[in-house]
Image 1: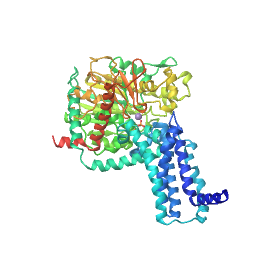
Image 2 (image 1 turned 120 degrees about the vertical axis):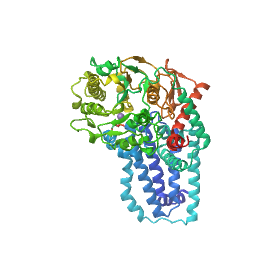
Image 3 (image 1 turned 30 degrees about the vertical axis):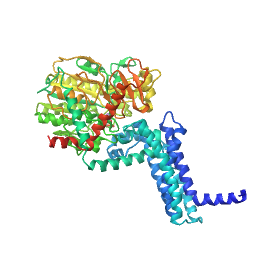
Image 4 (image 1 turned 90 degrees about the vertical axis):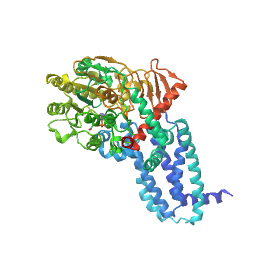
Length: 624
Ligand code: GP9
Ligand code: MN
């Protein structure tokens, strides 16, 4: 065949199949471009194969269609994929994660966070639509081009070849990942890792597969063997949580829990411009038991995950927010069990009731009342909504009106990302940090600290502290990963690695006792899963369905939603499959004991998912 023959043939082939060729090249490029934005140690080599294979599978499906429908279908595929890339790109900037289908469903509740996320949106985020727009006029022209229409049976052959090659290559990469990280594909405990290693399109296909298969799977009953394993674990766990000196010391006392928005531990007992950042909390810490190795364990559910763990000692959802996905479940929650023990229970938060589906979820957890935005005079705004000053002031009057004993759960708001309501924070001068992201955060948390100080002093004056146990903790990080260098600089963290990053992901946990009979710093490695078992012990509540450890017991195991974990001696980082020695900071090899701990951690995440996906508490309560 001479060049004179090949070129016209080639030209004809390209003209006949320009829509397919363009789709594969454009979508592959966009997926690779997305990965460059999200993956620190990005490698074309690693990612090109699964990305191209996933694109090929979609292209092959369109090949089955007649030319006209094929072009349109490829164009629609391209739009859908680009929509996911734009949304993921923006979501990644705030959550350092990609959006799962469940998260899209709870997206309507992320009013506040959407406000934060939207402050990150830049025109470049929409670059993925460039070809879509350019294609509009080109498609009109292309539709007029004379193209050979193959009969179905001749379309079947290229479909089978391309589909088989695409699925085989893609399937091999997915299988390799599932061997390297067992349960990752099924529990999606580390979505970003999937997107980083297989590409964003593969992640969403797997996510869709999971959602559909979970729906189908959960329509059936949990296998008896899995149910038995969960029951055995829960029994052992609750037995190991009752051996502490604190048993029953809270009975008849009020319980006041204050969840503080974005109170990250580095601000505690720290200074900026030679002034204390949180002078009031520092003072109350000296009058309380203070856990200085207490980790937040939230996932995509943000604040609501912190609330969920505090009130249930169950892990956040693998994707999306438990507050959304499981709001129809039955719980043995802290408010429910306090209710059964004769307590009045109330949740108080000055922001819109439907945010994070709270109004629905607080009912599911059996709070007697939820005092939301409409229960507060919206007389002052700082940040997202009602100021902490006004919220806490008005809350004192509410607490005084509650029948005793009561459990009240207060959630603050003003120190919310991106901490840009600087004028609302007063005139705390952060010196060299003025007009920086870190400086604004320090102003925000200093403001909230001042309001907490006023609030706690009022409780003192009203004698409420004398007959109440008061718990104060931060819900999650304040400094997101895309600003992490400012945190490393502020905390003088040299040569940061994953362990150093994790060690900064702590929030203060403060428990104040009525006569300050217990005080001091407790260094145990613990987390948000552990406060409920602790309180259950103190208030003599049943501990049937908790996965956390009593803070005053000797058990120490903090498992994060992405499969990472620490017991205070070693630290396992799931997305690099690396173990660290906590004391020395050095990387250590996996030992059989550490492998066992890793398996226990993923088993616990699975147990928690099973309890939630199968509404198991309802089943077990019914069958008891
Ligand atoms: C809004 C507040 C913020 O009610 O709790 O939630 P977050 O954005 O931190 O998840
Ligand atoms: Mn929050």
